[in-house]
Structures are given as structure tokens and as C-alpha cells.
Amino acid sequence: MWDEKRVGIVREVSSSSVTVVVDPEITTLSKKIGAKIYHIGQIGTYVLIPVGQLLVLGIVAEFKKGDVYEGDKMTQRYLMDVTLIGSLKKGKFESGVSVLPTVDMVVYLLEDKDLRAAFSTYQKFNFSVGQLSLFESERAYLDPNKFFGKHLAVLGSSGAGKSCTVSSLLQKVVTLPDTNIVILDIHNEYKSAFPDGCQHFDIAALELPYWLMNFDEMVELFVDSRDENATAIISTLQDQVYVGKKAKNQRLASMITVDTPVFFDINEVRAKFQFLDTERISGGTGGSREGPHNGKFTRFLMRLNSMLNDPRYTFMFKPRVCTDSESAKGLLTMIFGLDGKSKVTIMDMSGIPFDVVNTIVALVSRIAFDFNFWNPNRRDLPILLVLEEAHNYLSVNSRGSTAARLTVERIAKEGRKYGVSVMIVSQRPSEISETILSQCNNFVILRLLNPVDQAYIRRLVPETFSGLEAVISTLRQGEAIIVGDSAPMPLRIQIDAPNPPPASADIYFYDKWKQKAISTNADDVMERWWNQHKT
Image (tube, rainbow, N blue to C red; front, side, top):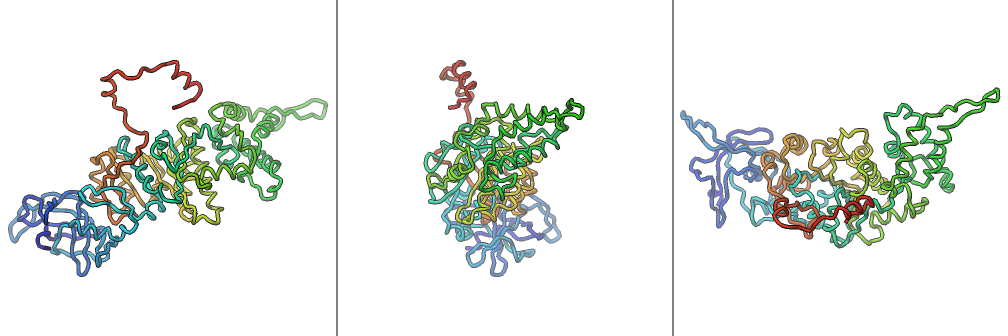
């Protein structure tokens, strides 16, 4: 049986890979074993190398023709560069290679049954995300504890199938009795994918009050860092917010800090700034002179007044329910599904101003982290935050806006200790903070066309990714390479289609143009635009 699986011998060995010379009698680059034909040298396929009692597993990274000496004669032979990824020992797969092959050891094809042995440890979880692309009848099994609990990145170009992939992955756990997922949905795509066990909030309609922000988030939202009086504004704002919180929360007065998430009246803070901005102090001769802050807060007040009067910010600055500190308890119970009514909370951010997206992401992410930080039962409430279009607010190059990035960086470094994990979803991974992506232990890599993004991924993922990196630009829609702690080896998988799908399907321009469609009424569109009403 082993003889019919033989493909060649080891020619060269390095610390993590080997070069294999394919046997000269293999000319068709395929072998029939049983009823199945196996292809030799296909990028991403697997081979076995017996080393003592171990079977070292490798993945084909490169296939080429090269010159090989046979005695005194030079001849052309097929060569395979193979990255070593793990070992099969007594039928169980172990990541990493403790014993390297040596030159002239025989190399064999990996059969379906060998692959099943590699997955045997992972099958106990019964968590399969799709079908192995190169093995028609084999499902791909992962360790879901490591997959969801060790930070995860879903990366792919526009149209590669990110939204469908995210929906499919989450649908596999939404039926569990105590799932807890919060999706920050930039484009309102996920509501249709979770008709059951889900609550959907339009943030423009949901109250997310300003007083839940910590001071750094307030500064980023309210203060223009280019203002020459920014230092004085920040100092005064800190004093007034602190005083306002203490005045409205006498029971907690001795414990309150400027960051404590308790109610204060933003209008009282504004009034104080207006007073200081126009203050005049009596002089010694009966006259008056300008106060120390006279005229210094004018630009700040214009910015603050603009936000407070903008109807798009009503959800933040004009709460009708969250008007005292006690209301935070009900709000957080609802967001995290603590009343048992939902397992997935979708926060639709499509209707909020783009300039406040960063602050909302920072606020929701930090609330999740702080909530479990103070939660004595945090081990019983693991929370997964799904951050869609993450490159828009987690970039190191974002101009003047850093709150979301700094918050998620903290979660990436410390969140696992407190039961908070993140799923980063992006089409431009090269624009995301490396601090965040470097903390991800699992990657779901869909088709990536941008060479800069491809190079960035190669730097971040483990060496065992070598061999599959060449195919990331040619993956089919919904096909992904999964690499990380949750997988027994780098896997090329056709992800299961979500059922039902998210509202992210492409618009078929040509097909629409070919037929008469429903007419568009400009009056209706403008009324919706004016009233900020989406379907």
C-alpha cells in the first residue's frame, strides 16, 4: 500500500522545509489509489514523510523542474518545495515538527484516510466550517474554542465573500443556548442573515448616551486638536465633567472619576463654557476687564453646539430614556442580551455620521471590555465583537481619530483574560494597526488582489502558511485559507454558504440595464434623504 503512494525522496533539508525530487517514473503527475486519483505537486496539497515512529506532514509550496545529478549525468527532474507543518503520532496530529526528515528519506502522498486521522482530534467538537477544496468528500473541522476565543481576522478583497463568510461562521454558533455576539454593522448587511435569536438596533434610533463615553473619547469627539486653545479646553472640560458627574450622583460622589460611566448634563457643561468664554472681571477702578478664558472657547462652543443641534446626533445627545445613571443597567442588559432574548446583537451604524463612527466603535468596544473587566462571572459571559470594515477606524494613519484603534489594541492585548474577543473583518488588512492583527491567532483569508495586502499577510501569519500564499489571489468566491491555532494545519476551504444570506449580494448592472425595472421617484428619495429614513 505504501509503495503505491510513493512520490519521491528528500533532496535537501532546512529548519522548516524540504526539497523533494519526484521519482522519474512519475510522468503524468497523478496516481490512482483505490478509486480516487491524487494529483502530485499541486500547490496546497499534502505529503507524508515517515521519520521513525512519526509521520511528518508537509504542504507543497512550490513545484518546478530543475537539474539533478544522477551519477555523473545531469538530468531534468520535477522538484517540490515542501513546508513542514506537523506530525502524525499514533494516529493523532501534533502541530510543529520535533524531528526533521533527513536526505534520501521517502516521501508519500497523503490519502483521505490520513487526513481524517489529522482531523480526528478536532472532530470531537463537531464544528465544521466547510469542505476541503482539494478533497471532495472531506469536511474541514476546527477547534471552536480557539477559533472564537483567540481573536480572529476575516480578510479579503471586495466581492471575495467576507459578509457571507462571517454570516456562515456565526450561524454555526447562534443556535447554541448561551452565545453572545455583538456585530458593529457599517452597511446594515447582517439583519437578514439572523432572523432568529437576534436583536437589531439602528444606532440612529437607539440611545447610546454621551455620558457613557470616557474622557479620552469625549476629547476626541469634542475638541479640535488644531485649536490653539486645546490645552485649556481639555483642562476645563475635565473639571466641568467631573463636577457635573459628582453633582448628579451623590450616592457615588466619593468614588467618581472623570471616566466613571454616570450621568451628567452636557448642557450645564456648555453653559459653563459659554460663561467663561464671555466672562468679564470687575476692575479696581470700577471698570471691568476680560476674564482669563475670554474668547478662548469660541471655536470649541461652535463645534459643540453644532453637534448638540444636529439631528443625526440625537441618539447620543438627546436621550429620552437614558436620562440618569440607573438607565445604563437596562441599556447594557439589552446590548449584551443578558435578558436571554437574543444571542446576536446587530448594531446598525449605516445611519450615523461617518465622523462619529470611530467614537461609537470605541465606545461600544470599551463598554464590552470594561463590563467584563468588572464582571465577577466574566468566564460565563464570553463576548465576541465583530468589527466590520475595520480598516475605516483601526488604521494607524487615520487623521486625528485614534480612540477606536487604541481601544481595540487594548482588547487585542488583554481582552482574552476578561472574556472579550474580536473578529476583525476588512478588505484592506495593510491599513489596520499591526498591533491588532499581530494578536490574532486565527486568519480566514479570502481572495486578496492587492499586492501590498498580500505582502502584509505573509508577514503576519505563521511560516506554515507558505505554500498557500501563492493562491490567495485566485481563490473562488467564498473560498478561504484558514491558518492558526484552531486548525490542525493550513486549510483551503470552500466555506459553507450562509442560510439565510446577508444583504450583501452584488448588483448585476448589465442584467438590470437589460430589462425595465421599477421606476425611481426622486420625490420619494429626497423625502427619505431629508428625513434620514432608510428601508
